[in-house]
Every structure is written in structure tokens, then in C-alpha cells.
Image 1 (cartoon, rainbow, N blue to C red):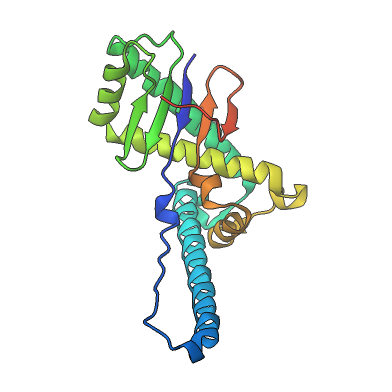
Image 2: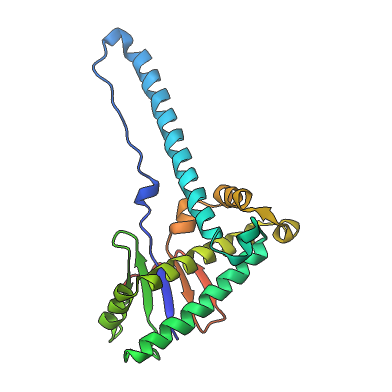
Length: 212
């Protein structure tokens, strides 16, 4: 049974900066403080808007990979079906490849994605850790496949817990759906620690506190 978990660095989504002004006279202290507070508020709002825009853009790119999106419309059911398809493909293809390389796939192991190095790493307790990691280095398309799977599972989990029954069946334009997800999720929801356990009815987990 294979255990898959992912880790994403969120720093890119929280890159806010602060600018401090020059010296102010004592008579202007109160006014300067108020101006500074206003500037900080605007800066925080701008940073939050940029984060939301980037999140929506990333979600839109992921939605566009779903075959059913070719006509510009999707339903939430399409996302669930795509997540199941990606999971089955990853499970079958990757495990078959690893078996050919002599990897012990009968022993449960954990995979994690590190965005800082754009690489997949395997849990330290697996005897074939090096073989598994070298496999992903030699096959970057598998890393992309893994990232797409985790992202699609994030979307399907949000849709299942947030969308109303009527909305769940309703078709939406890709742009509208990406905005809906952007408003319904945070960057950590989409890019945070998440996991998938194979052989356990495709159970999906979020924010699992596990390390390799």
C-alpha cells in the first residue's frame, strides 16, 4: 500500500513588504502615525489581492487540463471524476515503473513534494528511498502528474464540502469556477500539506502533521 503526501512552501503567496518613511517632527507625529497606518493597510490589502489573484490563476490553469473543459465549461462533478482518474493513472503507472526498477512497493511509503526544489522526496524509512527519488528526477512528467493530482484533490475536497447540491450540478465557465474556488479557498488550502492514501478507498487528508 502506497502512502502519498505532499508539502508545499507557501512563502511565494505571502511576500509582503513594509516601507518606513523618514524622520518626522514631534508636531507631525500623530499625523505621520495615521498616514503610516493607512499606508500599511493599503499595502496589506494590495498583498492580499495579489495573493488571491495568483491563487485564482493557478486554479484556472489546473482546471484547463481537464478534458471536459474544452468547451469552456465544467461542473464540480467533472473535477471529482478527473481527480479519480489522475489518482488511478498515477497509482498504476508509477507503481508499475517502480516495480520494474526493483523497488519494494509492498512496503508502505510516503512521497512529498517540495516546491523550493520542485522535487519529490520519499520517506526516510523506505529501503529504496534513493531509487524512488531518482525515478522522479529522471521523469519530471511524473512530478507534474503528482502535483496535478494533489491540486485536483484539493479542489474536489473544497467543492464537496462547500458547494450546494444545486451548484454542484451546475456548469460554470472556467473563469467563474476559478474565481469561486479562489473565494472559497486560501493559498494554504490549495498549496498546503495534503495527502492521499492508496488502498484505503482513496482517502484524502489535509494538513497531516508528518515529516520525512
